[in-house]
Image 1 (cartoon, rainbow over the protein chains, first blue to last red):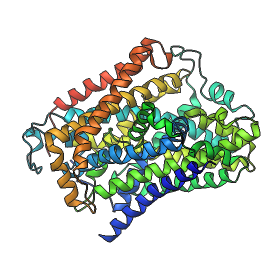
Image 2: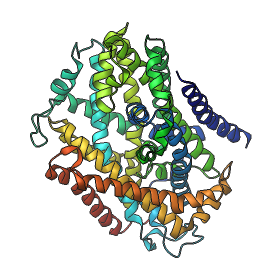
Image 3: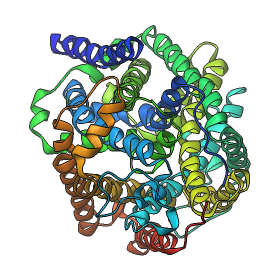
Image 4: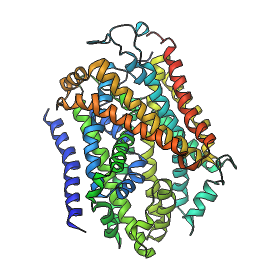
Length: 30
Length: 504
């Protein structure tokens, strides 16, 4: 796979799952 | 009027909303659209549209339901031009709101969708049974279109009612009715299975898919970005439409679900969790689909592009064909159609629940009777889609509900809140109860981005059908399955809003 494909994989996974994890942490912190 | 019910806990609400948002489209539409519009480039556009259009709209619907404590017609009906600071103490019969009809229209569009969505569940229910002995045989295409659907050669040639689909439809409706039997109480328990199980099954198919020969070739098609596509307006049109379709906004579902939130509940953070979870499900589902298609292309000795399909053909023709080639084929068949059924059912029952909540708010009817009443009417209408011409009608109604009904509601909802209720009032309220706050960008999104994009998408849909009939169907069929249904819903919505609301 072209390196841009890998980059897409890293960014999309990071943003989507990072977003979920961040939101869950904020929910637990309250 | 029955006592207001609440979710048992936050997880129940979040799972129910995720269940409503994720559906068949996450598996059979998202990966295909992604491939078609530049792979990874589409993913970036989709995430941007999700954050700036989808999640603000989701938050808007949650805020409406939570603040105004009722179904879509009831909540939107409370809003009028002199309503700043309204706290919901005025007797509902004396309300002067002018937007109740928008709520009814949203529920009716959702009802229109569930009449055929339940039929697709009926197909999947049949295929679940067929999987045990791979009844589709060596030619799944002929099996699906000729034997199961009994597809005729034209839209006005109805052929016969396919009784196996009617049976599947009946099973789907019994499942839907029971899932929302006691409203939020039942839904809150059902979703632990109907949301978590398809997630597990998607992961099973990802693992199975990526361990097949040729899988990586498929994933390359999915992820490798064609950044030039970002300059193509069609990519943005597809990304924004997909965000609208995927989140189950515009049908009054999220308004009804948020109205069941107990006091001191969060809105903003929940909207982010639900929006991202929906997108993540589609994203991961893409790996299951593309790895399997990569394998299929390899054994057929053709490029991946040649085996790319979406919609019913992907699920009921391509997948059964691939399953035939897998070791332990019946097991994967059963699991695949179980995954489709569990993905679909919570979207279906959320649309019905939104309607039940609306009718109960309006007429004070008993939940059980309202639930069964909607199911019976929808089941009878659904029989049209079980005929030999059913697939054609399903296609037209689906197109009009999503491309006209949904965008109209999204436009009206955002305009009503932005300019009548005032976006900043709603934002301040949402922030006051939430764990994270949104800034003024949300006001901007609700005031300008969402309404303008809804109008642009709506105009585009109008332009398309005016230039040529949808998918080349006869204009009469397009009128009957499209304009007449939308127009009929509009008239029914206005009539319902004029009927006096039953006092508490």
